[in-house]
Image 1 (spheres, rainbow, N blue to C red):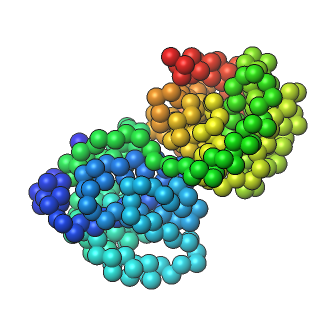
Image 2: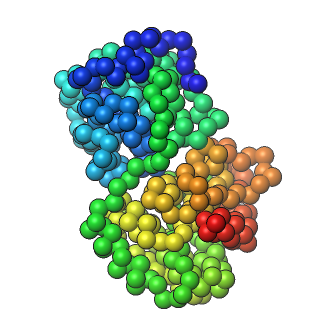
Length: 353
């Protein structure tokens, strides 16, 4: 599973385990959802190497995902565009890592991996990057969920997979602050349901009016208390949904990533486009319905057993992975509100069983 024949015996788990000074680096610079999905490797590395030093490198926008991860020793946070790249490479070299996992494998992270000088450098040899990795992994990115894509780098070294959960610790003060938000939003007897209309690609966003209609349907059918999430630059979208809804909705105050996680932990359900908040909700255990079109829910869908996804089946162009659409983004535009509502009902029954 994931082996290429290039991984030497001395690079496998039993040989690595006996090193008393083992130092490990995991590289995943971006984005928030992808970094969170990669957190699944950290408890497995800690179980396999309880005495090792384990560091995690990511960029500043995703720093909150990694901070306070109990399975790592240090978070190396890179500020894109301001930190000196050569200084970073020298820093990585000085740390004298023995084992490096590149979970991103773009040209820059390949350079980082090689610059460490680690004796075992694990990665996917995409587009001529094989030179950076002496432990190359066959990719299953088009066949397995992103969590398993990350775990394949461990499997390639025979490292046991004992944990299948994402890691996103929530600080007590964030939970306390968000309890006030949820308490103020709870005006009816039904569940608290978060709606997330955001998305890094315009093609991944279901319509704002559709979200508003869905919010009203949730209020009418379940006496739901609707919270519309928003992040930097997105408040206008949330206000549009709130203004269009007949029954109203709550907009939370500005939140950090951790506060968003705490808020979602306190919600009963989440309905979301394929975006970082969807993965945060599943990481904290909230039943989550993902709305999909240009991305593949089998590969990037919500990762917990109580969650599900919905899309407009029957289109030839589903999972196109395009960030712009020449045919009107029909996979999202034509997805009916009642189909999303029915999918939510099914998920709600599954979560209750």
